[in-house]
Amino acid sequence: MYSLDNYLSFHYINRSNWLRAAVLGANDGIISVSSLAAGVVASGTSRENLIIATVASLIAGALSMSAGEYVSVSSQKDTENADIQREMKELRDMPEFELKHLAKIYEDRGLKPETALMVAKELMEVDPLAAHIRDEL
Amino acid sequence: MTEAKPLQAAFTSGAAFTVGAALPLTVILLAPIERMEYFLYSFSIVFLMVLGMVSAKIGGSKVSVAILRITIWGTLAMGASVAIGYLLGVSIR
Image (cartoon, rainbow over all chains, first blue to last red; front, side, top):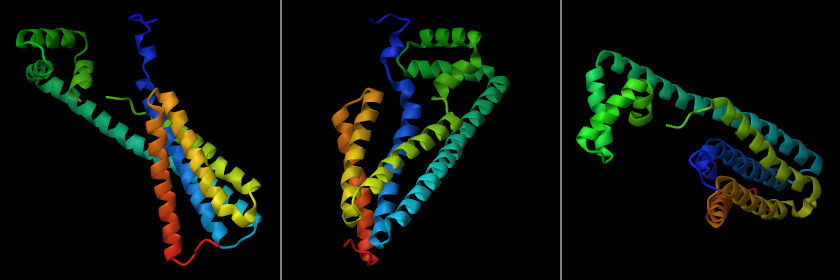
């Protein structure tokens, strides 16, 4: 049953990252290899040649899919890391402004101005960078 | 912000592609060569429906929506490649 400790285990959003990659891969594997095989069949070739072409497209497709996912997710990660670096610099250079900015974010989410400022102050005492990454980016 | 994991994504999608591609490969090994195109297309639609079902179950979302979406878009994609082949003169016997 639900308790505060196991609450997240009733939700599936933590699977969304690898599930997205898996659905993309399997969908592509079925459609591209079927279509390629059908194209090769239409040329009137033997089953032996057809098998060679299909196995080749399986290997090429799987490697290309892995490489493609690696570079595309890496570019997403690079962007995230660059944003974190920018955030660290902002926190160093203008902490007062960043505090107000964080408070404004909580205000926009529905907290009263006093409460928002209090929340922002307390969170920035714990871990300023984490608070900003979580709520600003 | 979700945490991006390049290696996990690369491995997952590569493995999933291999499993997905193994299905039409099985059809090619077993189905009669004379009517291979029809076997390929009909089995692919079945495979896509299974994929839609499995992915919705894993993600805890609605199964019918996932099956409908993956079947429609998959059929459109395969149909378009048949149409291009036809335009280029490689019509199915």
